[in-house]
Image (cartoon, rainbow, N blue to C red; front, side, top):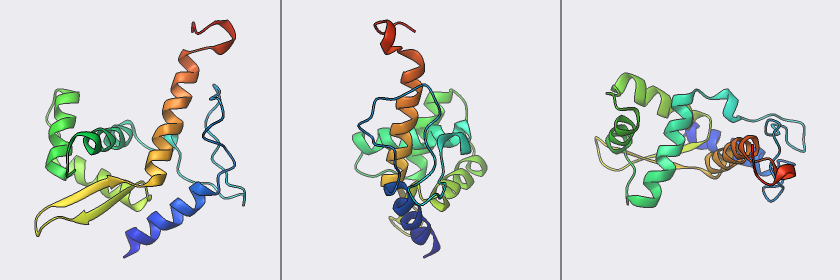
Length: 144
């Protein structure tokens, strides 16, 4: 399957990243180059909705046994306080699958399950660290 190949390809590139996850975050944008000089998807390549999809999937993975399209849709509707139509949800999920950030599997004939890949988790972690670095300034005791 092409989407599995894309996920493996992105995962391989993300694991080659020269940025260490244990390094203290800085206010600069996350590094997007690997040790081999390739670039990979970063948070700024995604729309806000796609970032919210990743965060929603991560949240649902900790609270539900199965993360599927309708569950993701319901959670986003509570977050946005508006209806999310299928024409917005599923193409964006497919983009995240194509980018190797989300894995998709068939749960039954009508339902697909979704889960973050290691690359998707890595991207969310980097984004959170980058956002926090802009809020918390270590030089002045934590005040922004």
